[in-house]
Length: 77
Image (tube, rainbow, N blue to C red):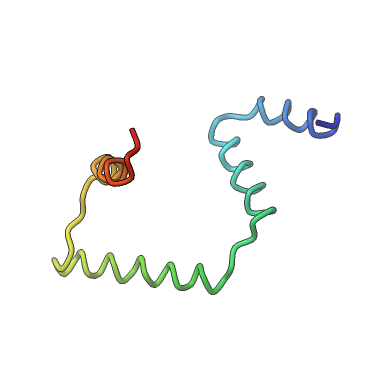
């Protein structure tokens, strides 16, 4: 790691956890730019799912339960 990066990492360690999360997200977006068409499609999917839930067409489960089901399905602990 070069000295400039080491300096930036040291500065990041001085940030609050929330600020570190914002920094990490910003850096991630810099190297993995989002696709506006994908974001639009995902926003529509989210809206459609929420409306279906509100109409009683689909049920929701707790996120911990969902993760446990996925871990079991994929043989993970």
